[in-house]
Length: 599
Image (cartoon, rainbow, N blue to C red; front, side, top):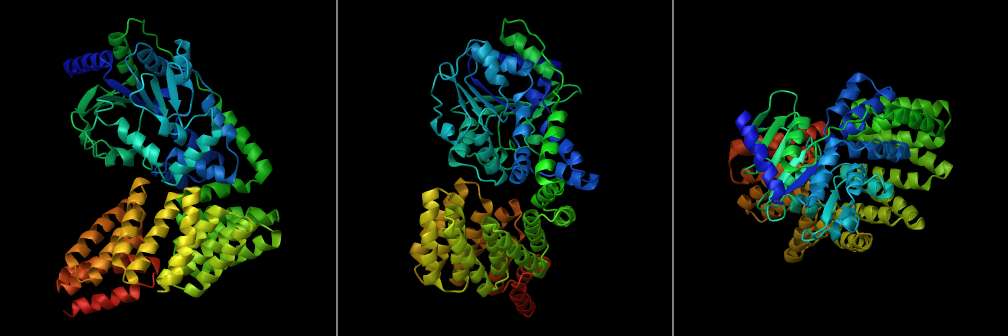
C-alpha cells in the first residue's frame, strides 16, 4: 500500500502542477477552524429543545440535510445568530493549502458546500483580489454568469455564503424543497464533466447532500471527471475503486476514479510538500464558543415566541422525515403551551400543523376537524395568511378524498382571500389545485380555463414547479377531450420542466398518466413501459400514492393481457398501499383483483 500511496501522491501533485485538477471540498475542511460540524450543531440544538433520545436519533440518522433542518427552523423564527457561527473561526491548514494551490496557478476551479469565508480570507492573504484575480459564485444570479473559460480563479459556493444571509436563506429553502435551480443543476453537472475539469480532488465531504448535489452527480450523462475522493480515516491508509462503496456514494458510475481512506491531515501535508516550495505549516484552531451562541439564540427565541417554540420546531422536523406519530407528540406539547398562555395565534398554527400530521396518518376526519378549528381561529384574530394556508390544505385533503364539492368551496374561499391580499404565489398554487379538481370531475373546459389563469401567473413569478403541475393537468384535460396531440405536447413539456428542476414525483405522475393513456388505447406494452418508469421514479422519491397508481395501471394491463399471476401481484401491491392510506381507489382495485382471480 505504501508504494501505491506514494505513486498516487506524486501523480496528484503532477496533475496539480499541470493545472489539470479542480478541488471540491465539504464541511470537513473547516473542522480545524473551530467550527462545529453540521451533525454536532444540530444534535446540540435538538438536545437543547428537550427532544427525547429516540426522536433525536430519528432526525440525526435521516437523510434530511443540514440546510433543510435550518430552513425548517427559520420558518418558526429568525436564525441570524445561528448563521453568525459560520462567520467565526480562523483559516486552517486545509484553507491555506487550497489558497496556495490557487496562488501558484495550479487550481482554477474550487467548489465548496461551506458558508464560511476562510478560503476567501486566505486568497486575500496571498495578495489575490476579489473580482480581479478570483470570482465568488454563491447564488442563482452568480451561477448563471460563470464562464469556465475565464482565466480568473472561480470559487463556487454552491450553498451560499455567510456574507449574504438573504441569498443564503433562499439557497437553504431550495435545498429543503428539493428544487434545484436550472443554473445550479447545470453548474454541478459541468463541474464533474471531463472537458471542464479532467480531474477532481474531493476532501472533507460526506456525500450527504441527498437533496441537491448527489442527485445531479448521479444523473450526469456526459464524460465524467476522474475523481480522487479523500475519505478521512484514522486507520491505515487504504485505496479502492470509488464504485465499491454501497451507501452515500453518487460516484458509482465514475471510471478511473479512486477512494483513498487516510488521515486527511497526513494527505494534505504530503501533497503540500510535493506541490510547493512553501514550507508546510500545520494550522489548527480551538473550538469557537458556538454553544454559547446557540444558548443565547434559544433564550432570545423563547422570550419572543414562548418555550412552545422548541416543540414546534421538533414537531416540524419529525414531520419532515415522515415520523408523523412522533411529530404529533411534540405538536401536542406545543398546543398545551399555546393554550396555557392563551396565545391564539400560536394555537391556531399548531392546530393546523396537527392536521397535517393527522392527514399523513390517514386520520382524515380528525385532520378536517382540526383545520376547520384553525380556520375559525385565524378568522377571529384576523390572521388572513394563516386562513388562506389552512383553507388551501383543507381543500387538498377533500380533493385527495375525491370529495370534490367541499374541495372546490375551500379552494374558492382561499382564492378570494389570496386575490384580496394580492398574494400571487398563493393564487397560482390555488388555481392549479382548483383546476385539478375540475379535471377530476371531468369538467375539462372549466379546468382548462382555470389552469390557464394559474399558468400565466406561474410564468410571471417564475415558479417552475407550479408551471409543470398546471401544464400536466392541461395536458390531461385535452387528452380527455380527444385532442391527444396538444395534450401529449403539454405533458412532455411538463415532464421536461420537472426533470430540469429535479422533481421526480412530478415526472412519475406524468409517466403513469401516459401509461393510462396507452392503456385506454389498448397499447398495453407501452402502458406497462411508461408505468414502470413512473414506478421507479415514485420509489426514488418515496411517494406511495403514485406507486399504488403505477401498480394499478400495470396490473390492469396484465389483466387485459390475461396474464393472471402478474395481474394479481401488481394489483395486490396497489391494494396494500391504498389500504394503508385509506384511499377510495381501493374499491376499484379490489374489483380488479377479483376479476383477475376469475380468469
